[in-house]
Image 1 (cartoon, rainbow, N blue to C red):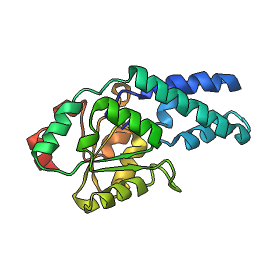
Image 2: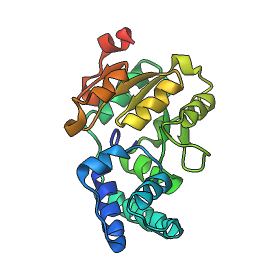
Image 3: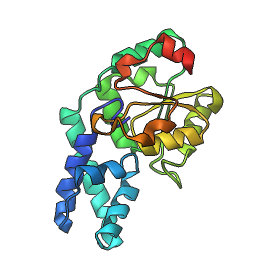
Length: 209
């Protein structure tokens, strides 16, 4: 969802930077990229450990970041290029569509309603309360189960490395649409297909999968 359907990754970074500054540190763009796709709790604990911040501060920090992100996305979140195209493509091909995300319910609700895609989603699965988040495949397996679909017959679209690993671990085909500054990184070579935009997906590429 984040970074694939809606351009929210910069808003996540903005919110995290504002809150992390209260603890005396700020992440670089490269640091943000290494933890993209993680759940908020894991993201915070990762960087708290890195900067020797006591984990007892993590729950309040998580609440503050999530509240900020929801407000920012509601106010200025924009659809990623190709959103309408990709939904129209798979609807016209009679595919079932589900959403598998690391984000919690309050943000999911804001995003799907802002983008107007709720009626097209037959399943929504969140990793927020699972024992393990991405790169663990459970959220994708849960989504496939809700769709009554075989994971081996699913195509997943991802923008993050952690998400790609989760999809491949679930034995799904994975089409990755990385952020522009990461698009040439060799780590994305594990995907079945790499695109610069959802707008570029077509019938021929579907057949290759």
